[in-house]
Every structure is written in C-alpha cells, then in structure tokens.
Length: 289
Image 1 (cartoon, helix red, strand yellow):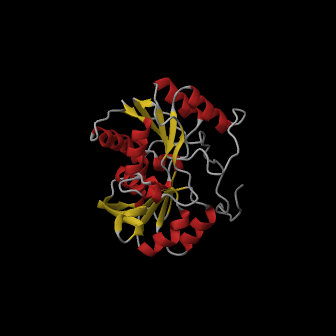
Image 2: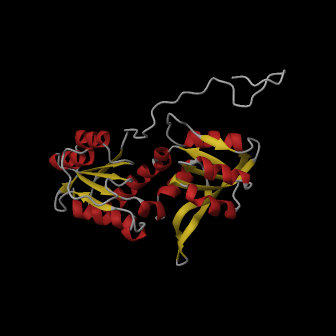
Image 3: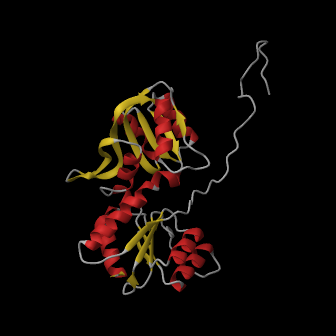
C-alpha cells in the first residue's frame, strides 16, 4: 500500500498543478496525507453516487476530473450536498483529489484520451501552452487514417464514447468529407474561432450553445459534433488509472485502481419531437402544425 501523500505526489507529477487555469481548484480536497491507500477510484464527477461507489468498494481515494468546490466557502456543514459528500468521505476513510484543467492540458491527458477514443492519429495541441512544451495545451488536432463522410464520422464518435440519453448531435452537410479533426473535452465553444482558423474539417466537443454554433455555421464551418460533457471526459479515466498505477509501481508502491461504473451525466431522458418542423408546408402551400 501507498501513503496518500505519495499518491498525491504521483498524481501531481502526471498532472502538474501549474498547468491549471488560475480560476481552477485542483489538488487534494480532503484526506489525511499519512493515511494508507490501497484502492483508488477514478470518476468524472464528485457526486453522491460516486461517493457511494468509493465507500462500497473500500477505496481510500477517489480522483475526480471536476472540482467539488470552485468558489470559496466558509464551511462544509453536512446540511448542504457538498458538505454531506465531504463528511461521508472523511467518515468512511476516503480522500478526494481533483485533476481538472491541469489534466486537460497535460500530455497525455483528457484531450489525448478523447482523440484516441474516436480514432485520431498524429495529434497535436489545438492551443499550445508554451513553445518550450509543444505537447502541452488545450484541445487536440488529429487526422483519421481513412477520411469518411460526416454522417459516418458522427456514428464513429457515438461508438467511441459511452452512451448517454442525449446521444451525439452534429451540424453540417452529412456528405462532407472529414479527415482533419479538432477535439476539446468538456465545454468547448469558446475555442470555435481557433478551430475555424485551424482549418479542420470537424470539431468534437461538448455543451455547444445555439448562438456560437449558428455563427460558426454561417462563417463556413467546420462541421460541429456535440457530445455529452461527461462522455467527452470519461475516456481519460482509464488512462489516468493506468498511469497512476505505473507511476507508483516504478517507485515501489502498489495500489489497485478502478474506473467508476456510475454514469454521472445529469441528463437521463430524451424525447424526440413528433411534430412537423416549423416552416414545413404541404403541396397546397399551407404550413402544417
């Protein structure tokens, strides 16, 4: 078994805190650095269901991608959802560690795992962090070994990521040939101008909003593929788990790792519209309602 302080040090070597955005909250949230850790669970979200899984499996640490606290707090009473989660973990002997935007920028990190999940090769950062560190940065750009129509590419993305109620949405001509692709795990519409300037054929990300997407389409592309936020970041978990185990093993420590089987995408239902699209008209020219 390893001490928590050794596991935290290994995680910070893999995902340096210095890579995180200034507004981010990464690192150890709760836990005794001197406690022994035999099992480490990896999950996207620090929510009650993940805490349940952590404790039922007997993990001494849960590593999540999303932070529990992004804003300063003055207390963590068990009368609030986040306070209850902290109390449950501490009472159950489990620590919580967060690797967020530092894992996004790391190489390999969240975006490398997303690119690999959909079959991209020869990846490089979409937004390099530093000329001295060419592998680090936000997003990734890569190529498909065999170009394919957008309609087929969207199916590829759906197969490569975990299933969600909302599935995968796309904007663009279904017959457009896709070869060069940009990806950004999590919410990525702030990078639409950068993606367009990069000249890629398609952009895969999450949480695309109406107006930025519409403006991107009016500006000539690229094709947009919108996936669930949770699904875009989930592929990183297995990679992070394997890398932590290897990192600790190289220094003489052993932990058992596991990827959470709890889906934490907040959207759990989808109903397809059965009415005619607005503006549809019959042969007589009258709009159907």
